[in-house]
Image (cartoon, rainbow, N blue to C red; front, side, top):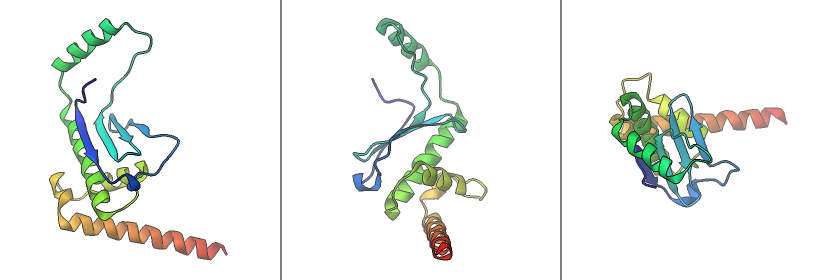
Length: 145
């Protein structure tokens, strides 16, 4: 099967934690996110896989789908999520679905364009958010003692 309608990213494998679930359907974006323990990450348009169908029927459906285009809004979500992975990886943060979504959504309310996420200012903002979250969790842990 050919990878279409998305982006395949490569990050250092140690940044992807081993979880029970590595395939994620992000319904709010109509995007599939696959975090491979080998460092390969797929961000692409959600694909519905039918069970117990004939191989020939699947090939015909794929050919018909190839004629359709990914909606522009879904493309934007794919790019935003992929850029979030790039930023987090460059900063050396362990990749989780929650952190990827949070980083992608952090670029929405501001005037940051999708490609602006790869600028130095967004890297700094992302690192600051992560440091604040870490400090807050340490405060909670120390307050619980």
